[in-house]
Image (cartoon, rainbow, N blue to C red; front, side, top):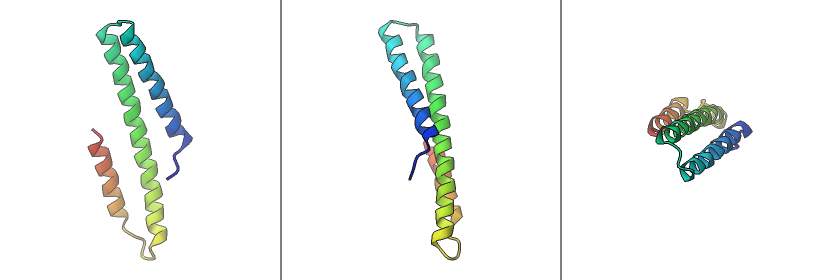
Length: 89
């Protein structure tokens, strides 16, 4: 699977935020501030996962339709995508 540069950029941004949280902890910042930043990181990663599953679903559905003459089994692909999202929490 090819990954969109948008997805990779989102993860790099989250990586930078996480490095910032580690600096905050080293600097002895208040717990409330650290938790707030961690919450923002979690939200960013959750959104990235949803974007990744959505684009993966689209790609898988397209592949499923083209590789099988009868159109494949798009329901199976969608069930797997939903399972991925549900299990991610």
